[in-house]
Length: 247
Image (tube, rainbow, N blue to C red; front, side, top):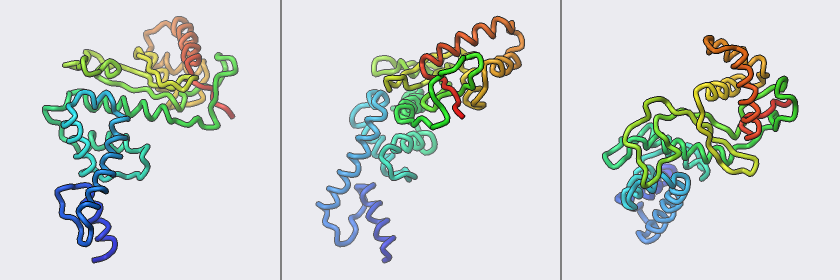
């Protein structure tokens, strides 16, 4: 048997406790490996998805993480990426059961996004707004993400489980403030569209942004839109959600 085959057999035995232990590997030693690897993965998943975990019994949660540990082929060896791997498993491989809340995927995505925002790096081409907001090239900050959900994911906890989705789509911005705290902001559709434009077309100034929104909302009065947009951008800049594009 080749070294690669032995290595694969060893990995499969670690992931699946019911599999036979590879030849010449003591059962006690394999038990240590199994416990160590699973506990590490379970710890990272639990710390990344605390609200989701709180909706399950301890046994049901361990069963879910065990299924992920056994079935999912992780594409990254980095522990910081485990949360993303777990989300990918839920979205693409996992078949929900009666134990899973209907908002499981949206809640998991929201909690994963909080982690993404918390560790996002600021590239050299963006920085806090220092110029006049009327002429500054603007963009959506790298540590800010705009999302759309059907459930009020920010309110979900063990004693609040929405039974049905909202009547209309819900828009949120998850961002990191100046004190490195992860925050969220509920958005109306116009604000969500504004941030989406700045994310898709970084460098737009107030005039270009106002023109783009006027084309999307032709029934809105242009002067009212322009005045409201200036105030909105100032608010978003103060929160660090939008930044200035640097040369």
